Image (tube, rainbow, N blue to C red; front, side):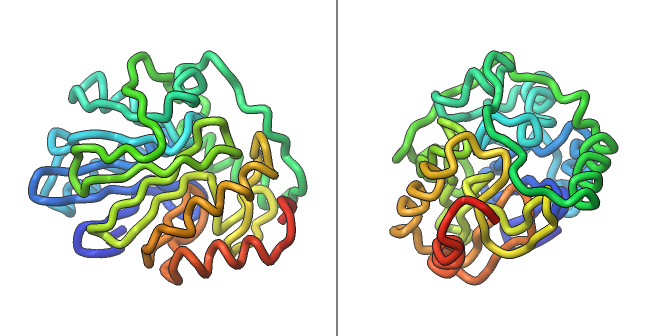
Length: 240
């Protein structure tokens, strides 16, 4: 799905990954589920690209619904995989999330689980080799992505700010569709390790000026960072 001249989405409102392009190649943000590999290659084809044009993949955190095709990219094309140092062990299968379900709707939850299974979510491969990043890093990848630390959903959750495409990729630091309740609009994400810390981390986006807020789950938000964060703060707490 093309969002802008150099900005693309892979997947859908249930689980999504993103592509940023410039003259030097492609940066991928998050890797969805294993079965999103075919969606990735199809989207690259529409761009006149192949996986060989990918210069790096940045993971917003280490949960299994974000690392899907990452190891395949690394093994087959030598693509370096970047993740915050505090989430490296999670992406390698050495640590697990401590987040709870919270509120849920049976229909929405079944839909999320069914999609996850259909897209190979039970066959995801943990990572064997990663490069670690930290808050404030600017990576020498297409789009010159900047790392914004967003601990809470997981210890090493990050947002990725790419000014050239007027977008910040937030992973599960916030969501625009709760996959367990079906509720839409900016809100805290489920399965969050430390809900209070995640809400506090939203202040780290106050200095980010971008139109697009692109989550790992939910519709792309083009109402600006400030409006998205304000909507979440107005809920008054981590339950959504």
